[in-house]
Length: 171
Ligand SMILES: Nc1ncnc2c1ncn2[C@@H]1O[C@H](COP(=O)(O)OP(=O)(O)OP(=O)(O)O)[C@@H](O)[C@H]1O
Ligand SMILES: O=C(O)C1=C[C@@H](O)[C@@H](O)[C@H](O)C1
Ligand SMILES: [Mg+2]
Image (cartoon, rainbow, N blue to C red):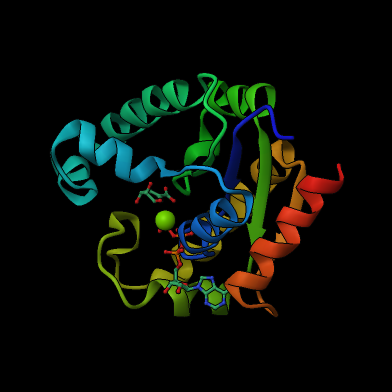
C-alpha cells in the first residue's frame, strides 16, 4: 500500500495531467494538478500570473503549493513542468514522495503543446527551440529526482498509467 504521494514530473505537454488522472483512477487515489491548485489559490490563471508577477512570482507560488501538497495526503500529483528548477522543490519531491518522470522526444512535445495557448513560456516565435532548450536544461534535474522514468512515445496514456501502477504495486 502506498504511504506517500506520487509526483509526476516532466516537460510541458508530455502528459502529466492526462496520465496522472488515469493513474489516480487505477490506484483509487485522489488526483490533483499543482498548476490548477496554484490558479485556484491565486484566483487567476497562469498567463495572468506570469504577466503581472513575472516568472519569479509564479515560481514562489509554485514552491508554496508544492510544500502544501507534500503534507501527508496520499494522492497522485501532476506537477508543473518547471517544478524541478528550485533546489528546495527537488529536495521536497525526493524526501516526501515517489517521483515518476515522463519522457517524450521534441517532435512529440511540439505536437502535444501546439493546440493550446495557456503556456506562457511557449508564447514565442519558435516554440520548438524553447522546448529543446528547456529539455536540455531540465532533463538532468528530472532524472535527479526520479524513482521511475517512463517513456510516453509508444504507448497510450492508459497503457502508461497501467505500467506505472504495476511498478508501484510491485515495489
Ligand atoms: N501517451 C500519450 N499519447 C498521445 N497523446 C498524449 C499522451 N499523453 C498525453 N497526450 C496528449 O498530449 C496533450 C498534452 O497532455 P497534458 O496536458 O496531459 O500534458 P502536461 O504534461 O500535463 O502538460 P503541462 O505541463 O503543460 O500541464 C494532450 O492533448 C494529451 O491528450
Ligand atoms: O515548464 C514550465 O516552466 C511550466 C509548465 C507549466 O506546467 C506551468 O507550470 C507553467 O506554464 C510553467
Ligand atoms: Mg498539465
